[in-house]
Length: 333
Image (cartoon, rainbow, N blue to C red; front, top):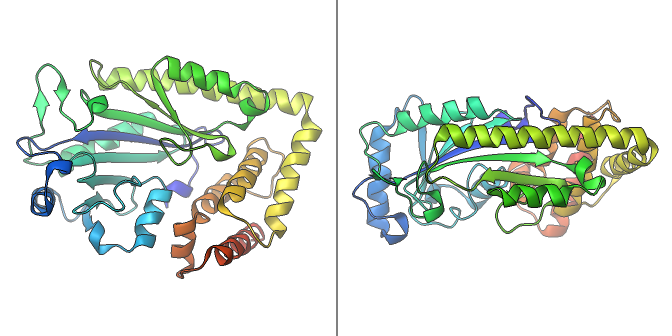
């Protein structure tokens, strides 16, 4: 799948997402709709899409493993998993996904690996046109697009970038940088989204402001800030390899050794160790593992995704055993 690929600046940027929040004019927001009202929204959107390009999937038809796996891969929100009367519109490779009846009637999303804001945004615009054929969105001449959450009013555009920043963290510069990002209007979240910790120095950074600003301004601001962070992270890695090469390689190879031999790994420890291995691959300390392999393992070893991949349910102890076994096998290929 696309999220296991590598692209521009993939040594630092894991993925890029562009998202629009949109609502159908004349209809109540999802939290005010009963099941019949939500079904009406789904049917309207189902009638608007090209069935040769996109599929519409009701979450009520999915099992918990499938929904949980999609959330673990950051393709849908955790909030929509238990939502009643919700659905998805998606293309074949899940690079384009629109959530129906989450917080808004539509949360339209485009994904790319690496730092690819322009292509991600262009795909979002085209996807939005495709799935909104004949549908009028709720819009105000003064404020822009009307959304259920006031923070999305205006363009409704949010650009989110997932970054791996171990170099800055090891130099003690990360907290100050993230504080500066928040002070200029960016949101900083952990690997699992809002109100979560960041395991393995993985952070989601996105624009907060959508009102009184254009799509172009949002994109240019994000590109400028993220490019600066990428440059600083790469500089930090060079400094570490110049001044602390032995210590860095020792830490990386210890993590690699555990991953290649462990018999039990819980999800949190797995993320921390894989983060160190990813760092080692990115700086060239480890040459027999690729970033593509890292992406595959990190996506596949989360609870629901691992269960889906192995096509079985298991208790937590067995899950930790199966996770370790899967990683050993992948790293031996």
